[in-house]
Structures are given as C-alpha cells and as structure tokens.
Image 1 (tube, helix red, strand yellow):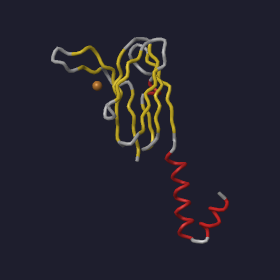
Image 2: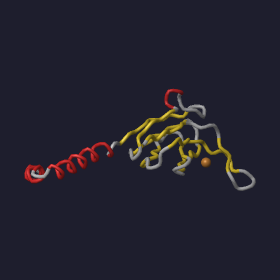
Image 3: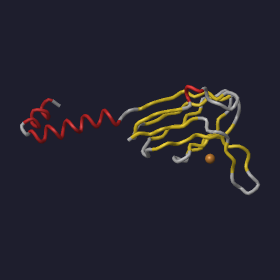
Image 4: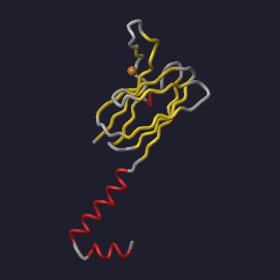
Length: 126
Ligand SMILES: [Cu+2]
C-alpha cells in the first residue's frame, strides 16, 4: 500500500485519481438499517419517513402484530411479515425519488390487489 502511494504521488494526476477512488469507496459503501414495528396496521409516526442516499444499502427490519404482505413500490419488493419474527427487506437504493411501502390487502375479484395507507415513505437523494 505504501509503495503504491509513493508511486502514485510521482504524478499529481494519478494521486488525484487515487484520492477520488478512495473517497468514493467510503462514501458509496454506506449501509443503513431501520427497525420498523407495525402495530394496529401502522408504524410509529417518527419512523414513517426514511431518508437515504443513492447507492446506500438499505435494510428494513420489520416486525408486526399481525400477518400481512408488504410491498415496496418502485423497487417492487414484496415480503410477507408475521408476528413473532423479524423480516428483513434489503435493497440497494439505485433509483432516486420517493417510494412507499404499503400493506397489501385481500386480493380483488379482478385479480389485482388493494393497498392500505402507506406504512413508510423512503426518500432516496442523489
Ligand atoms: Cu403493491
């Protein structure tokens, strides 16, 4: 490592590139977790807005007092949750914007599904 650094610093441009690579490696590797508890079909108010940065690895750890299916829209991840277990929903936040996690309710006669109110909103910033 020391030898590489010495070699690179002979060229100012190479040193700059190395610095950028090192900075990028630390900034982009963020891994963030959120513990989310559903009670009576809702998540506590202070946990309903989740803010992350693009490319973060986001881990949502769900627990619930009743069984249901959760759908992270946009990223299109669906997970069944049930009492007595922690269910992880992990994804890399490649797409920026606002995305909601909504509970899926009973299937509709037409074959589609209905959504309850959003449990949490995830904001992914560039
Ligand atoms: Cu859905």
